[in-house]
Image (tube, rainbow, N blue to C red; front, side, top):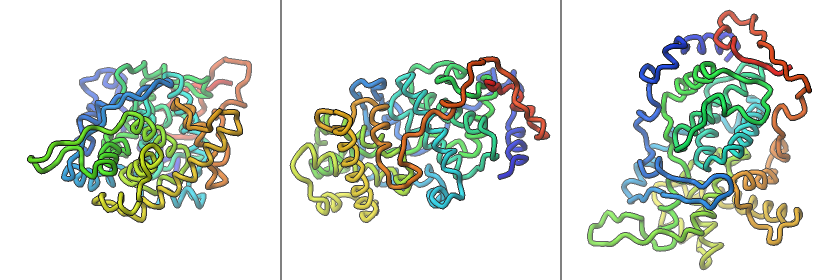
Length: 377
């Protein structure tokens, strides 16, 4: 989509400043009827390096089957990964946005689910909407909007929208500008903001592997099995987080990632898991995709352990904090563009002069909607 189209669409979504400041005139993003269960929305993840405290949804086979059918509606377009790999889409845009989101996420100690949602929104948006080239402020504004939406969905304590802009960003935006970008994201995602995530399925798959039974039996004569050990859940949560940094796991559905993670962590912490036997317990998923995802996870886990050992870690284990997990995951190098940890987009561009000036947007007929963006000179 060209620059004029970007400005035109953005202009169509603009509300008056009074409307944007009035919560009664802005639709609630929680009104969306989608596949995420209320238990998943209430999940609590320990941020800032604390132990994960998770209340994961318990699914019957019937509920699981329905969620698997719905999850495809909350994924990027089918050609998104291929366009990133071929260069049709600029991978640096995703990396730049991810690096800032990661920095802000670590600063506030948000939970893993908030980070996952922010990246889900980002990838889905980029798969359907092409940002204008040569405008770094558009990437930064999109990153802020996606994180803001993700945080609002799951965090109990939400900072002011302008306060999300931490890490000495190159561009700083007013609250009304960020809200307008949020509306652009919401519109392009059709207000589908509660996607099924791997966290939605991990409890179900672990129970299947360990007990060969779903969390809630459809048969009323049988009693539900106890939840998996907290250590298993914690390992699974951190491993799922590792899949976000690169692009290769975009190939898989959340249920496929969860199934592969469950097989891997169950095999590492309990008795050896027969993959074929475990897969025979799963319904409604492509077993070949789960095996491929499992192989990628094994390679990633090995690379992370090697990286941990080379950095002086005593056991080469996966780091305990979300920021540590993602930094370690960056050592995985399936693609040359994903081999190094990207620095903060403006880390080498900042000048001592902190004076701010208005961005020149005179080339766009409707660019007044972003006239309040500020750039550090």
